[in-house]
Amino acid sequence: MSIFAVPKKTTVKTLKKITMTKAEIVNSIAQRTGVAKPDVATTIEAFMDEIRTSLAVNKENVYLRGFGSFIVKHRAKKTARNISKNTTLVIEAHDLPAFKPCKSFIEKMGQSNSEN
Image (cartoon, rainbow, N blue to C red; front, side, top):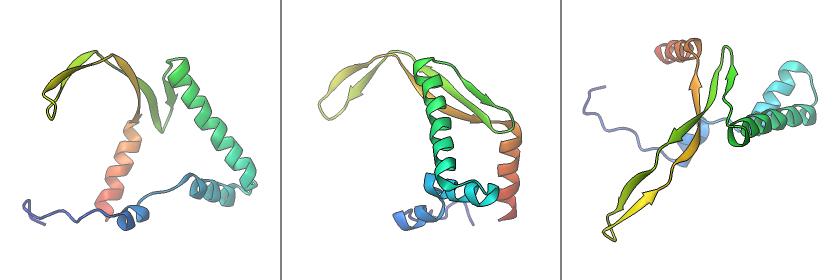
């Protein structure tokens, strides 16, 4: 593939092949562990809720060794321009959730890409 190659157009159909939904994760974990799907779904919901609470309410980062970190990134106050109306806006300081994968996770992703 040359550097001038036009990237393939991304459509909903192609995105569907490379995404995994929460329901698919629940099914996969239930099959691998033998735990009932409703129990797995409840556990995953509780896990996500705990991360949300830690980041949004407590402003605490969540570190999962061997996986990565869910972190709170602070964005400072800044001015922006609305070009269509030719006006300036002030975007207030705010916090955003972010995910930073661990080094071994990044290496594993590199290995899986080289195999394809």
